[in-house]
Length: 129
View 1 (cartoon, rainbow, N blue to C red):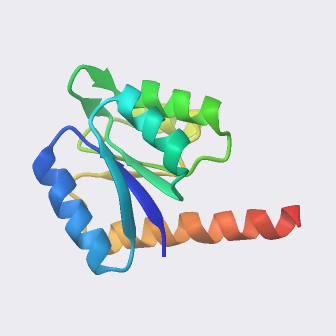
View 2: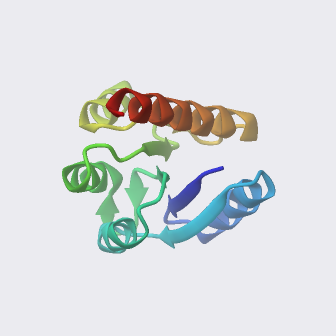
């Protein structure tokens, strides 16, 4: 399945996401609550997917998204936020997010997003070969 980094300010959210992801065969390779740690983990671990919240303590997920995409234009970022404002969703997609999930979301919705990202990645890799 996928190697995933979870970026969320809530330790409770990170705990439940980790449990669900691992139960469904994914490997959570790291967790972060700010941009500095997220970028450091991304460069070190090169995860398949980053689950990134928008509102973080003393940080902004859109800024982190922009930095991740500057680091790796092929990064697979799924934004996860309770903020479902249209302008935020549009900006996230313009910055390179592959999906945007509105919290609270169903486990099945998360899995569908992960599978779509993995399938798109596989198709892109096949085109580059």
